[in-house]
Structures are given as C-alpha cells and as structure tokens.
Image 1 (cartoon, rainbow, N blue to C red):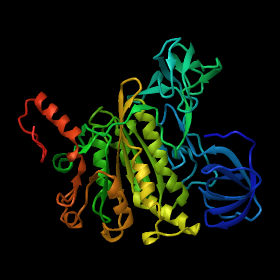
Image 2: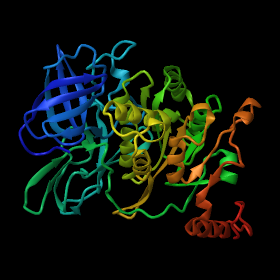
Image 3: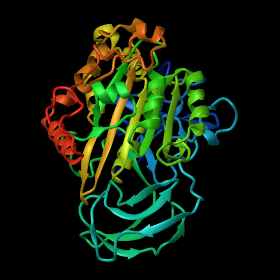
Length: 472
C-alpha cells in the first residue's frame, strides 16, 4: 500500500549477493519496493529490514555490475499485483510479469512487462444500480473471462461505505476505462475501473465470515477421496523423495478436482519441469468444460536458477490471485511446488543477514511464516451471501526423503491433510504413490464435516457413509 510523504532516496553501502545495504535520506517502510539505478535499467528490490538510516533490501534480479554509491529510489509502495480481467491463461513470474511477452529465450534484467492486456475489449455488464450503497469487495459488474464469470469489484483498498453515483452502461470496454463513479461519506467522487492493485504480503479480507471448512472437496484421486479426503477451503501437503510423483499428482488434482480456478505456483522448480508445465497444460482437455484446462488456469513460475528473492515472492503472488478470485464467489485450487524451495530461499536470506539460525540453519520463525501463509486459505462467506474458497495443497521435497526435517515438521503443524509419498510404492510403479498408512486427514474429526456428510447421505438415500469413523 502506498504511504504518504515525499519520495526517499539512498545510495548503496554494501553488497552480498542479492542482499544490498542502502544508506537512506528519509523514512522507509518494511516491505517497501525500491529501484536501483544500473546504467539504462532499473533493478527492482524489496526492503526486508530497517535499522536507523541503513536499509537492507533483497534484489529480485542478479546484482552483477552493482557498485558502492549507486543511486536507489524508493516508491512509497509495497510489492503489489495487478488485479483485473485477463489473468487466466497467463504465465507469470513471481512478480507477475507476463513471461509470454518477454523477448528472447532467456529473461533479461530489468525487463518488466505488464500483467494485463490494457487494449483488449471486454463485454461488460453492470450488476448494481445508481444509489446503491457498496463497500470494498462488493460486485459492481461482470465480464466473461474465457469460460468463467469475472466480477468487477469495489477496490479492496477502499474504506467505509460508498454510494454509486454514476454507472457506465453495458458494452465493450478496456480495463482502464471508468465503469462507475462512487461517492464517499464526505461526498468525494472516486473513479472505479476494471483493474486494481493489492500488496501480496497482506491478506485480502473482504468477506463477512470465515468458518471452519465443512464441505467435502472431490479431487478425482480415489486414494485421497476414499481414505483421507480434503475439504473445500482446506489445506494439505504432499511430502516425498525425488521421483515419487509429487508434481504428477498435483497435475492430476488440477485436472480432476472440483474447482473453478486453478493456480499453479512453480516455486523453485527445475527449468525442465517448468517447461513441461508450460507445454502440457495448454494441451490438457478440461473434463468440466470440454475446452482446455489452461483457460481457467494461471501459472506463476520461478525456476531454481532465478534469484531467491523472486522465488519467495512467487508464493505470495499466487495466494493473492487466489484471494482475488475467491472474492468473486469461486472455488480456487492453489498448488505450490515446492514449498521446500520457498523455505530454502528464506534460509538463504536469513543467513546473509546473519540472523540467529534455527534447526538446519532455517530461520527461527519458519513455523510462524508457514503458518501465516497457510492460514490465508479457507472457506468464506462474502458480504452478499455468496461463498468462495481457496484449497491449498503444497509439496515438500525433504532431502533424502527425511520427513523429520524442519520444513516438513513445520508444515505438519498447520496443514490438516498429509499425503505421504512412498519411495517403495513409486519404485513399484504404483502411482499415485500415496502411502495409506502414513497419510491422514484431520478433517474427519471435524463435527461440521460429519454433520454435512450425514445430511448429504440422507439426501441421496445412503444408510451408511463411505468414509471411515463416521456413522450416518
């Protein structure tokens, strides 16, 4: 979010890989974005620590060529994503730059592209009337994005109540055209377009209530649905050694799960695996719509050879996009592969800042960081009575298949579903290699889910639930 005040400037005082120390001449906020001037390009960076007049920033690009004394300009804003029609079917990097619009085979430093197509025309239909009172997150209109209804909402940054003063009639417009004029309590007019921005590190909380998840989510994978099911808005993770089928299982979930939107965060994956995602997803047929799965999918990709700072940002970018579509009343399936490499990026930055290390040199607050991130998923009731959800499933790649390492243990504490992949089953070509003994689902213990299953079973005439430990 943008803060008031004049722009702060600084100069580089130290460089350690992509961690740069800057001497500043004014106030700087935590997680503020800045740009480092290097020849004819600007390198994007984020503030991760403030100490008096010294600021530590992590650069999202290679720092090759940087020198002491080079100029740095701060933006007064945090790392934000652009939200609006046109996100689906896109291939983004962790900073939401469109990879398909970048030139050449290799990514160039400072080559930043727009997240949306600002020239494309959308068939817009208003959903409110003049005189209606609205708040942040309320639906003003609708366009059809590929096959999904995309709601145009009151910007999430708006505070208090607003009155609709003027509406643009139904027609074709680009995302920058004004579709409504609202007035606040002081009768100040504000223009609303189809696009808005939001900081990735701050959850979008434009919902009325966030209950404990209670509705079963059909994933289409029998060993999951039958033995250890996950719920809509639930959390789970898939640990396993290399080659046990974590990525393939996630692909199966994205194709068959009962979800409206699929967001894939390839966080720190090897380049060949990311290329496979880019080439295979556009060819996958969607069993729900009869079209291509990519039409309701967005991919956030940061390969293992990209800077660790961008790798860390990719998971937050993916979650923020998921919260945006959840606010439209849609079911979002968010898949992250792999959260271990996200944690490794946190470890690398923590070590460079000489912070007190925890187990295996990971940050001391690693469990809290993972917990806060997983808590952003969930099932919500919107202000208009509709519901939306984010079901989050991440993979963990423990070294040597050791399920006692810190990332797996920290994730176990917050994720309610645990799908352990067995090397022995994978070697026997028994895919998905989910070990039914080691795996579990804590959602079976929830009274809300048990009551939901009883009512569902009664509606279809079942005398006994198919799930264990539940009597209908």
